[in-house]
Length: 139
Image (cartoon, rainbow, N blue to C red; front, side, top):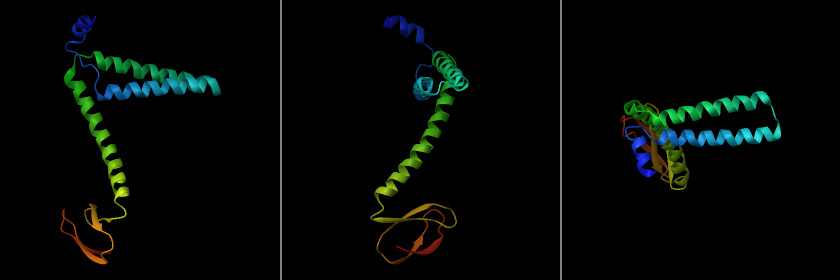
């Protein structure tokens, strides 16, 4: 069975990060549809969720069995770039929260770069490393 599956999937895209994300979305929509069927039984909403779930499932399998690997890699790369933007934004917020007792954070007035300055040093002249703009702030 394993050899047969290996032969079938040879030259195909298979599961990548975008397909994994789509499978979680499909699972979430299926669970949401089940909960909505039990609670409100709104036929239009559940039929719309069913259609959306089926469309995502068809797209997931289309991507998985596609032989156009170059195009699927481009799609996966675009997804990974968007995911990186969100995760890096969230990690920045989490890091600033964890460092809030030791450092104070400012934005450069000209280039909007986030700068970290130690707390409790009084009034400091802060120089942006990116653009060289100098400004004073109280820490």
